[in-house]
Image 1: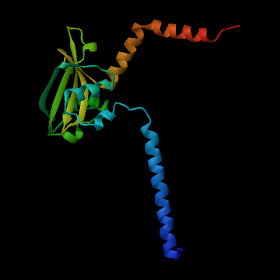
Image 2: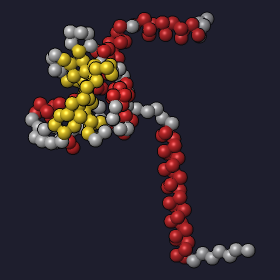
Image 3: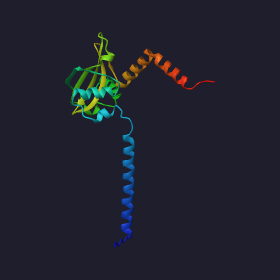
Image 4: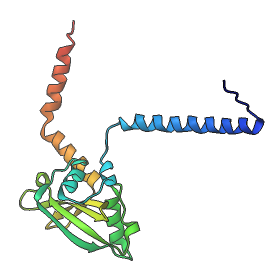
Length: 185
């Protein structure tokens, strides 16, 4: 037989312990619930970027396919002092949820790979990922020979809009099939 005695300080400790247990259960439940949600492109930021396959996976998250045979890596230095043009460049980089502000004066790896879908031979578009210690710190699209820099979100939206304009029959046929499922009287 066991005998359990609770004094007032013991009761307070038991209450605090119960409150902590409830908070822990709530946190674990929320984490499990969120784990079932779809993975976004930002998840690629959390994983290490060490190979060209990692680069391809990162850009696939934004809807861009890259030609890994054209992948190249260089070392570039983020300027310590920014002028207006570099501040504007950082805003473009910011579309991908990244920023170079914490990397002023540091040397980063600049991974580039051709994006065949956005290239036409006359002008080529490259997916560029800036990496610091195996972590993505900047991403953008670079058009050559013009040198135009585009944010990933802007380019992905423009690409999706262009695809919708090229294939308007897909929407129409989907609408016809939907109507045929529900006969009219």
